[in-house]
Image (cartoon, rainbow, N blue to C red; front, side, top):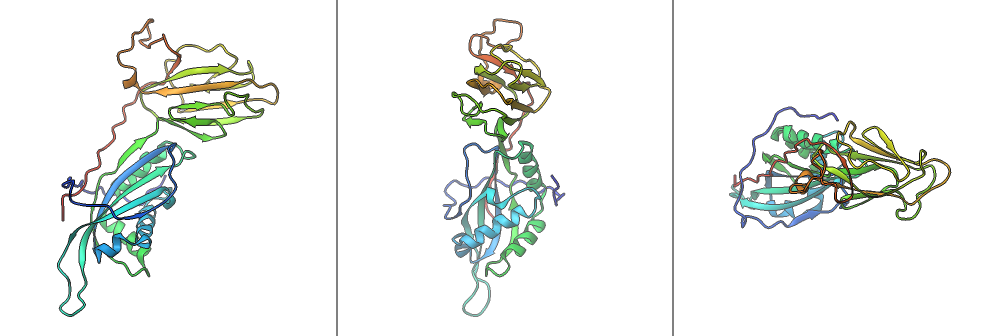
Length: 304
């Protein structure tokens, strides 16, 4: 992903919970199976803050301006909610005088399952690196001809990135909560099938709830090793690839498989019964390795 910004902004401080009520909103696609969700906030000085926050065109322009900062970000992935924080003095000595004020826009970006998990981190980093001057330029272009004006980008808060542990990036495999299953499961999968599953680099293991495929021909590949039939190792200790793949050939099908992912903190307190340190009393496990993911807390400004 190519970003268009290089300078990191300051991080905002947290306001009183009673400061705002979010009123202006715009809608976009939402999905409980999003690869990741990025949340953040931007504080703006605008003309006519109440009208700005309540106008869908202004919110759509805001999303377009943010998306224009980042090559691979689609504005359709975003939702935004706006609230006036503080009304400033009216400007101008004659009537009618222009009202100016400070607004805060909270935004959420849902990266769809078709995108790789790493896209979310790149989007978060690009937003963090953008400067108020750069964002103002994008917003000015997006708001041109709408009758609305951004006078100043006062603050870009550090975004928070919450990644899914995995997602189906290609093919008809089905994701439900923390589990993924072969197409049509528990009915027979189709011939000539293919799925690709992207796995985030975070602590955890795969719990194998069910596994029945055509031996030697219809395979689930984890860590570069192909598994088929009904015999499968209890533990695979090292992940060497961030991608799991499923393929079926042109003849003979079975009921398929269902695997679920589990984070390391959910495994604490397990009683191991072998040298691996993994609880072997439940479903079969694929250990995925561990890389800590630190998610920044979104901080909101106290005031301007």
